[in-house]
Each structure stands twice: as structure tokens, then as C-alpha cells.
Length: 546
Image 1 (tube, helix red, strand yellow):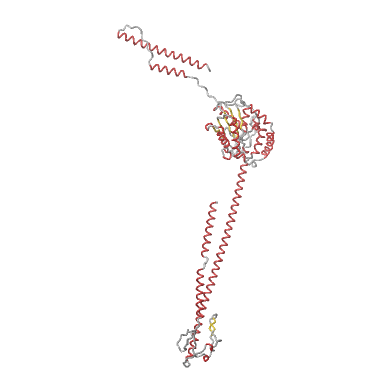
Image 2: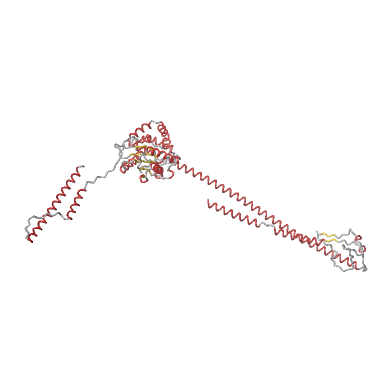
């Protein structure tokens, strides 16, 4: 109370006077006694004592005691600004409620409320959401709202929205504060991750019909994955704690609150203005929408906005659609309540399986094609081998024929030599004389035939020796041959037979050389084997990669 400081100061002054008087009187008595003893010793006739000031140590002690008494005061009891709803007195701060922009999951028509997944990247802002937040923050800048603190939910969408707002409205990083629990959205249990277009209208109808004014009814069905199934009252408890914390920590600030959903800021407005909680969806926020709540407002602007929106056709149509969707959801069992995220995952799995099957079919077709090509190459190699074998056998048979033909020729030469010897003996039996005869007198139809096919030599010995002209005949050079001149048995043998043998032998050698020079398929076989080994290694690499 106000009289406490006056009472304390009066008591302090009284204590100081009493302490100073007692100290001064004590010093005066000590001085008087000391003078008396001196007078007695020195026999001085002085009778008036000398008054002396207190010594320095005593003075400092008195000063310290006096200072401690002057600084004493009654401690002020600790207090917290606990906010009650609906509010009955102005708040200490101005507030701007804002919803984050459209998220990636919302664009995929998925409602996500599990607190564990709010920080996932897929819960962040989409391109549309970023544009929405930038436009809303530009309006704040145009309205010249003096934002000094940004408080945001730890959800990914709220965090990104706060970062964009910080740069546009120019708030320091030390004034951008996260909130980990009190700004979480209402969790919907089994309906989490289902279609946003189906669940939002159903929640609107459920809260309107079953929640009650205090919001304690209309609890969604529970889920087995840990997602809470909360009522509006559960969400209101967190929001009440949030406002009490802000009113305790800040005073005179303009605080921007960034929520990840549109129902939480609407519920906070209903709590401040005293609107029944089951009518909260009338004030639901659109993506990136913001509203200003001033200190002196006391919820009056919220009530006016509620009256205007409640009569809009859009809200009425949503409520009617929500009743239909709610009946559908209540008619489903737990097996039918499958999240859209799970359906998308299952669809992606089937697509991946189908893609893998296509890849496997292509691989099998490729392997079959390679197998057929390999068999075709092997058949071609075998055919080449067979042809080479036949060619070798043919060339071998030809070589054997040439060898047999040569033996017949030598036999023919032997027979002709015998014939020549016989003729020489017959001629030597007559008189030795020089006989000259024209070649025209020789019989022209008498021939010696040689049959090379059966290696038999046929000699016609029906020539009469008397018909032989004894005259020497001239050779091609016109010389006269003397029959009595010794000569070799082979001088008159035609050279056609020997020439034929040499030609056959040369042809056989050339054929053998050509055969040896020809490709026997060995290099082609080695090349095919290398290709097969390379293909097998490539197939093993593809199998390891897959």
C-alpha cells in the first residue's frame, strides 16, 4: 500500500537520530574522563571539556547502516497476465492473425493434421502459396502496420510464411519467434491425410451439429498411427495458453501470429468475441488471409464480420455439402477409411511394378534375340566348317588322282622305250647302209594310242619294217640323220607326255598351296567366341546394375 514507504522512511530517520546521539554522547563522556585524568596529572585548572566529532570508523559504520535502511522496500509479488475469454478488458498488445499460404499437400487435395508430419517438406508452401503470402505482406506494408514481433507455428508452411513476411515488413530476425505446440492445428484422427474437399465440409457439419457452444463434442474417429483426434475445446486450450504467454512476455507490441490452418485463428477470434465455438467455421481463414485485432477493439469487429459471413450463400452451401459428406464418412468402416496419401503410395507402387515388368519383358526379349543370333552364328560356323571339310576331302581326292595319272604316264614311257628298242634291233639286222626317206612315205594312219584312264598302253605292231624308208630324213633344220648313229632310246619319244605330267604336278602343287592359303574359319571362330564372352559379361553387368 501507499503508506508503507512513508512509515519506513520515518522509522529510518528516528533510528539515525538515536544512533548518532548515542555515539556522540559516548564520545563526549570519553573525552571528559580523559581530560579529568590529565588535569589531575598536570594540575591544570581548566574546568570546560573539549567537544570532539566521532572518529572516521564510527562515521562510516553509521553511513552504511543509514544507506541500507534507506534502500529497504517491500518486494512486489510475481504475477502473470492470464487471459480469460471472452475478454473483459483491453489486451496489452495489438494482434494480426494470419493463415499460411497454400501448401503442396493442399494442392494435392490432402488434409494433413498430424503434428509429427507438419515439418515435412511436402507441408511447405507451393508456388501459389508463396505468391499469396507475398501479396498479403505487400498489403500489410501498404497499410503501414507497425509489426514488431512475428510469432509462427513450427509447421513448414508457417515457417516459410514468416520468413517471407520478415523480409517484406522488415522485422529483425531476433523478433521472429517460433512456437512449438500452442499454434498446432486441430488433429482429425482417422480422417487425417484424406481428401481435403471431402473432410473440410464434413468437419464443418460435424462441429455445427455436434460440437456445442463450448466445443467439447464432435470428436473425429481415432486413428492407430498416433494422430490425435481432437475437439474444438482441445484446440481452444492451446490457444488460451498462447495468449496468456504473449500477454505476459510482451506489452505495447504489434504481434503477427502465423497459423498453419484457417480454423485456429478463427477459433481464437470466437474466444475473444464470445461467439459460440460450434460456429467457428463461419470465420475460417482463406490461404494467406490476415485480420487485425486492435487493443480497444474488444472483439467488436469480429462480431460484425461474423454476422456478415453467416448470411452468405457460400457458407450455407458448404454446410449442406458437409452434411452429405459426413453421412458418407459415418457409413464407412475402418477398412474403407483409407487415407489419400496411402492410395497415392499404392498407385505409385503399382506403376513402379508395371514399369519393372516392362523392363523385365524387354530384357527377356533382348536375351531371346541374343540367343537366336548366337544360335544362328553357331549354325553358320558349323556350315563353314562342313564346307571346309568337304573342300579338303575334294582337294585330297584330286591330289590322289594326279598321283595315279603320273604312274600311268611313266608306264607309257616304258612301253614306248621297249618299242623303240625292238625297232632298233630290227633295223640293225639288215645291211648297214644309209637310208634316206621322205617323211611322206611314212604311213600316216598308224598311231600309238595311250589310254590314261586304265593305265594301259596300246601299241600297234602291224607296221611292216620293209616299208620303212632307209633313207635318212632331215629334221627341222634340214640335217640328215644317220640311222647308224648311236642314239638314246628316248630321243624319238614325244615330249607331250612329260609335259602333261609336269603340268598336272604343278597344278596339284598350286591347288595345295591355294588350300593352305585359304581361311579355314579359325579366325572367324575365335571372333565369334570373343563376341559371346563379351555379351555374357555385358548381361552380368546389367543384372548387377538392376
